[in-house]
Length: 310
Image (tube, rainbow, N blue to C red):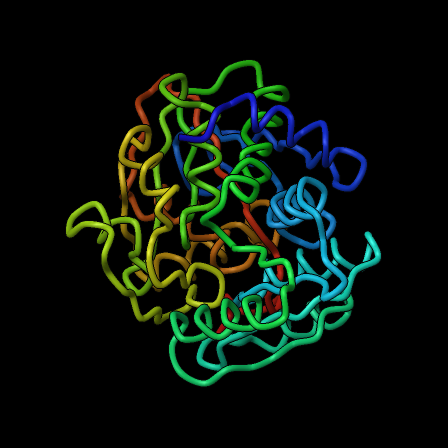
């Protein structure tokens, strides 16, 4: 089990390389809701998502060989690894499944210095290809959601939120492979209610809880590019079963509506994965108590700026 002291150490380690992203407190009626909220704006992070936290923690806490680093990603993890590798003087290769590749995210990975390798087949097959490359070349494998350095890095966002907010009862978190929610839950443990939110086409965590961890999800729908994990990682699964309080599912239509409300009410553009967490509230899937202090994590912003208008 990941220890909060590992997350605190990661926060110190990565601090020179990331941004402390802001928290925005929002009045009750700003989004057509009847409850005030706090938003953690991780889409303003240096690469446009929280993933840079885990990327830097991996590269700063492990030895990077001459072969450089390798990752598999639908976009945000790849952009983060490419940025961290370039910043620290290493080469990077990013394996991306063609089935969920989005041009905006491919552009970001390349702009940050990553060499993008598009793969045929499923997300799971892409993960196999990247792992084989690491074995063959000795490149440092930076897993997107199933190693302690990744989870400890992602968990630093929870430590940061707690430092910024006077009090917090509940946090809503969108889920792909479980690295973010695993790190957050490992930090908060039983002190804050952690709620996962997924779409019908990316329901990895919910299916893992219902059916067990040995599943393979074929990601589909509007959030597949950011929440398309084929399975929950073993380490996140261990943490989730201990500390995550609820697992909610929303539709693609709910996510699009949440993206629209985020823009209309706050003039913020998040990617579909980011709007998924908010969709739990705007759809009514999660209904806070009257005095419940709720935060929503806006996890990333690497998408076409008009994705919610189509």
